[in-house]
Length: 125
Image (cartoon, rainbow, N blue to C red; front, side, top):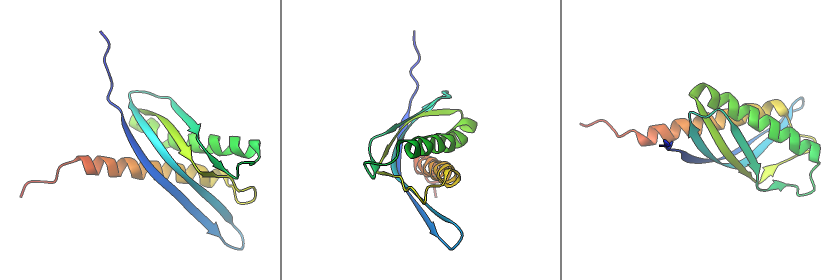
C-alpha cells in the first residue's frame, strides 16, 4: 500500500532592481512552485527567459542561483519542490548570483508564509 503525500502549489512574481553608482542588479521572474512534503529534491524548469538569445552560461548561473535560494528555504522545512519559472530576465551586465539566490530564497519564504497564513482560519470572536 502506498501513501500519497499532499502537495500544494504556490505562485509568485519576483522583481528586484538596484541601480546605484557602485552596485547594479536585476532579479526578475514569475514562479510556480509545487511543494512536496518529506522530499529533499528541488527540480527547476525554465519555461521562458528574456532575451531569447541570452548567453547559455548566464542561464546556467541563474538556474544554479535560483536552485540554491529555493533549497535554502525548503530544506529546513523538510520540503522539496518542482518549480517552473517564466519570463526569467537574464541581463548580461546586471546579473548577480548572490542577489538571484538571496531574493529567490526570500520571495519563496514569503510566499510559503502567506500560503500558511491564508490557510489558518481566523480566531472565533
